[in-house]
Image (tube, rainbow, N blue to C red; front, side):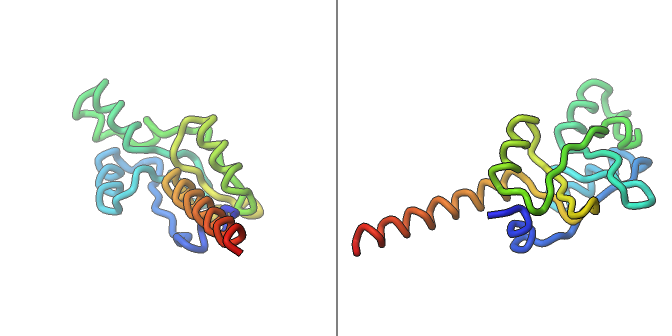
Length: 142
């Protein structure tokens, strides 16, 4: 299964923030959409960072409530790892595991087309294993 198949099933909508949005605004965005991370996009819709619930919690823990008034650009990850929509789920999982992050932007021909999470990848991987198991059972039974 490829990343594009995951996006075809889950959708390609992207929740994003701007670098100048406050952490309080981003925290609200995360909570309202029940998501764990947002891409930070510039005015040209290019990726300039990504921030997660963990990033916000770490900044609030070190600076207190005053951190919530700071721009998201103060706590976002600037060097964003991404995958291509043609990548396999195994490739996406490997990138997430080796980078120790849970969200991966998806590009197609250099353009942003979606965002997948480790939950999306694991769900599809489990479906794949269950499907293979059923096929083996049918093969053995016949």
